Image (cartoon, rainbow, N blue to C red; front, side):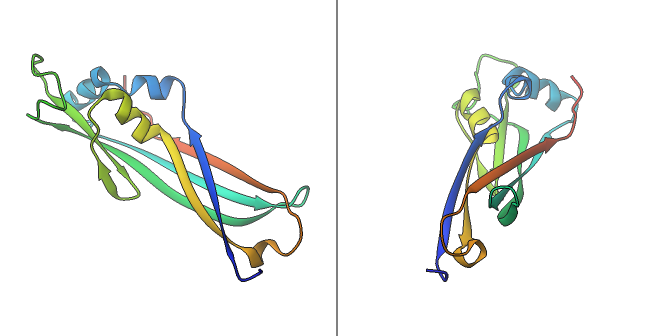
Length: 141
């Protein structure tokens, strides 16, 4: 019905050097230089139509990694001098993971549900597509 809402689930990941560089060694170096946050802005646009596309739903938000010192032995190797770890905020909700790989997944893997009004699309068969973008600030090595 035209009054319905259609949930569209969009999943994507950021892969490559930025993901690989966000590791315990580098976030410890960043912490030592008082560079204790990493923020990524991202957005998703849902399009309807083939040649003449129009936006029928979108989301713009961010993820933020906060680097902090901790004594929690579950988070870091107690044999190391520095005990630096990361908290990732997703849609303003903080998440602390226990491994470097889980931190990377929390920060760089995305899944968003965007509710699209059926009235925006119209009746009949339609092509639906999604466009995603991610941006971040440069940090020193």
